[in-house]
View (cartoon, rainbow, N blue to C red):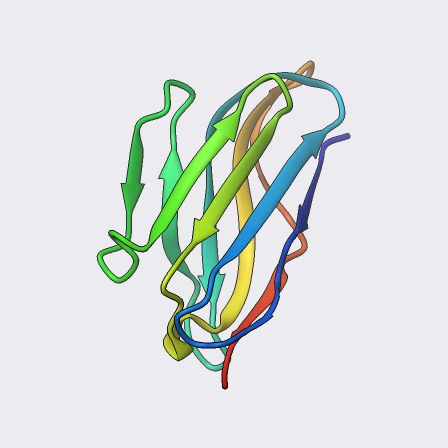
Length: 119
């Protein structure tokens, strides 16, 4: 069984920074793309950014230049560094990973961590 556990959310003032982490654990053979999505209250889930095994990244236009995704393959962990945060970045942030276990390749999600940007 595979678990994704996120940490690092919280309350921050506009212009501030936060760093999210997401660690995968379980019967993992390999992890393909990892990334972050977010869902604001009353809105659909949207992609924030994604990173391949080789470190190639892709970001939503709304966060380009402010957010940075990185990963540590040895630790099965993906990070999201969020700078210059805006109130519109307020949402539940969910970690995503495509994981090859001993049984199959499937998509996995974390439980979500709340990020609130407010003065």
